Amino acid sequence: MSIRTKALLAVITGNTIFGFSFLFSKVALQMTVPSVLLAVRFTTAFVVLNLIAFVGRNIKKKDGEPLVEFSLKGKPLKYVLLLALFQPIIYFLGESYGIEYTSSAFAGTIIAVIPIMGIVFDVLIMKAGVTVKQVICAVVSVIGVAVTTLGAEGMKSSLIGVLFLLVAVVAGALFYVFSKKSGEHFNALERTYVMFAAGSLSYILVALIQCAGEYETLILQPVSSGNFWICILYLAVMSSVVAFIALNYGSSGVSVTEASLFANLTTVISIAAGVVVLGESFSIQQIIGAVMIIGSVYLANVEGGKKEES
Image (tube, rainbow, N blue to C red; front, top):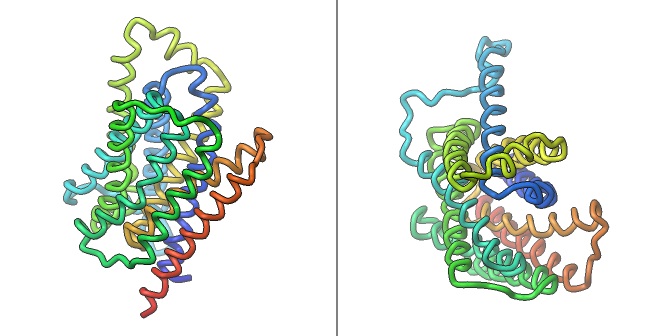
């Protein structure tokens, strides 16, 4: 299996896991506010990553090398710290508060612009070549998300909500840029470790400020609930540790444009999860939108594969 194929499978895996995360986030947010959910999610994920790093470094392979390579010493931190700033700190704040001030349908459509922003940054920052076909596929993917989501509810928006969502779009695209750049010195586990350390610290501070005077209701009650921890285990272990390691690994093997295009697959997966798990309806409009998203992602990456072969 080629490096590119492994990278594509990793990116698909990460976005598939993200697709199911909406179910668990929806349940958890009935018990608390976004900042508390994010604080507990990334702190739990950070603890899990520390366990992985500790165990992996102390288990030796046959050649005497550690099972897991993990070391931050002596490596340039510039790009990996920028990676952590944009994802998870800025992106999740922008997305969470953007959704709060708009409808989920409107928010989903704006967030779907990430692949187009990814193309812009791929050209301006990474100096990469982008084909007309990839640009068209990115636009079709955004339209597919709009077709899929806009039928679900009305278009409710506000200026502050739009601004938050635009911040999330920029941060989401820059995540792929700086994941690729920092990948020159840090492996996927090391990049994810720095991301979660920054995310945990930042969201703990935000949660403590936001919940001042309501600690018992917004913090103590949720963390004493078994259902809350079921959601956290999926969001922290699968949708954080596994998914972000997969995305960080995959971003090293494909272009920023190709990696960001897969982000809209999350919409398709979340709809499928709602149908299978929650018994939600699946309209013709959603089928059309899903086909547009999947088709555009496939065609864009077929183009990328041909370019690599040539």
